[in-house]
Image 1: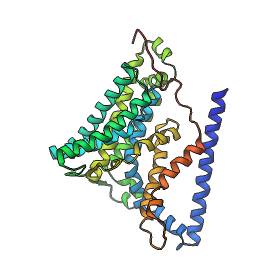
Image 2 (image 1 turned 90 degrees about the horizontal axis):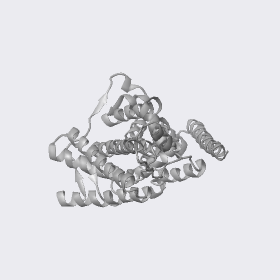
Image 3 (image 1 turned 90 degrees about the vertical axis):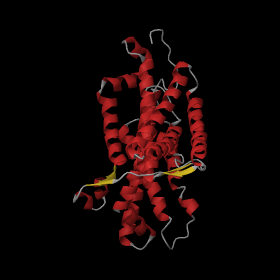
Image 4 (image 1 turned 180 degrees about the vertical axis):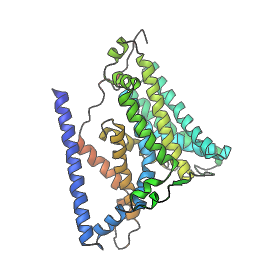
Length: 352
């Protein structure tokens, strides 16, 4: 009964969010059409531009990949809040690998491998040594937050380093000229890889035996073990997949910008934590997480463009808070998302 009430509350929260977004969009569209020189008109022109969609897709890459990784880990019963750390370490190693080998593809692979190794260490600590998953995840983040800038300083003499190459843009003639949606046909490799990853993740989780094992591992591991499937192995593979996917996001982000920035919270800037909000808002559905990510990334693209709009004396520091304020609002309206029943709980079986 409590689960049913929780589901109804979650659904109601999402409907409220959707309703508010729809009303807000309608108001902006009408006002923008009637008053094209107003702030609403400027917003409308920005939002409907092909460059806005292109920026949204590009900014979605690290968040969406991390969100997909978080879904696999958490649905298996392991809460990986260290996604931020995976993005950071992958971002640095990808640039280092690119500079070392002269190949962005080898650099990309190196970044993914670094994130996967970190995920493997996290899995061992949580599964074998039964550490608190939240504390272990925070440790992963803090280790990466200190290690990446430290290695950058040791190797390059600075926490910031430029890369030696970037991803090119794949453009499909004619289709890329379509207003707004043409951005879908003129994008970089990571964007297309993200589309494939979202589709494959949905298929694996919903149409394969492994996906059913992942769900069972997070909901009822005892039942999964009863049918002869190793809960420990399923969780190991799921956590490693979270490292692979988050690594793709971090490596894509730094190579795409052809630099690693280690100042402050590093160039990742909280994207791993936004990814957690994205997959919770998307209800652990890869497609839902992707669209949630585009909401946050779209707002980030919007705030970047708003900073260059003349005639409106809004402080840049205030505009930059728009995506993060949205995260708080989304959490407030959605409320508590029902996480997998066994998430965060250790499972021990003599047969595993």
